[in-house]
Image (cartoon, rainbow, N blue to C red; front, side, top):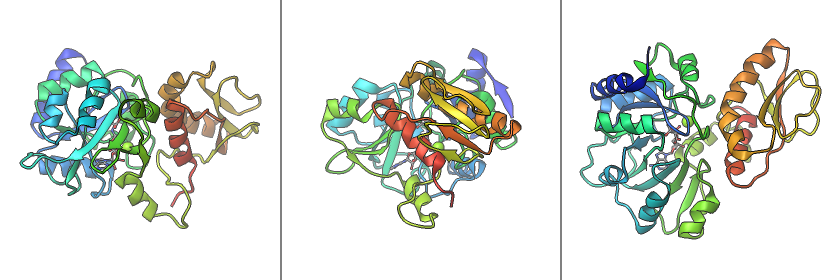
Length: 324
Ligand code: TXA
Ligand code: MG
């Protein structure tokens, strides 16, 4: 896999995308595994590279709201949200426009499409230069922790994709919020970079739902009521740790508990934005450093549920869930 960077790298990455190749690139949320969403063969190769079930639909990325709304029919709420939060970490699920050239497999055959305008300038420059809707799931093997640096992508996907465009570390560090606007009322399918409170402040009450990805993973669970395992590190995860053993790797929030084999500070000052940005890198690091130091599991200290905390806790609960 080629490692690209800078302005020349953006142009080269865009040319590869136009040629139907797979290029990972950094957004403000996580790195995405990008491909031409209008090319069926390319879309199929995205699923293959990730090892992802084909019925799990992909998000299509655009440089502007105008470009996105060329492929979906926006509601008034969608227009308000786009004006407030795009470019940024929000994905909107809307009815697909008749005649959109986006391949049906990208939307897993649904009559809806998930669209997003990412906020990171290099990502927008790439999307602009490519001039195509770019389907991009997180650039990790299916079920693993999402990548927040180019090095994470290399570790997961080397040999399986054509290139990675190094766009620096992801500033938000958690995937986008996914909001379904196709029903009678808005439904939050995945908590993420934009909080449910911020969305509700703009468009009123928001219900709770599950993404097709969650529904699919839930089918693999042995008993109902268990949480969906996803974003999974190798070591098992213990939640809400208020003490830590010497054979545990500590994921600390605020002042760290003493006595762990190794410690990763999400945020020493208890800052949720900093914690979100450091979460996935921390899980990867604790997996490696923890195993080297003889740790048998990751102990995660509690994180408050407000704002970005809801999305952090969502990912931690999935990381801790019993694996099918
Ligand atoms: O921040 C992000 O959203 C990153 C970056 C790369 O943009 N992408 C990302 O993609 O997290 P992925 O594929 O890992 O997650 C997409 C989520 C899945 O849970 C999928 O089920 C849901 O969005 N989704 C996609 N299309 C949908 C649709 N038409 N209806 C409902 N949910 C959809
Ligand atoms: Mg993902």
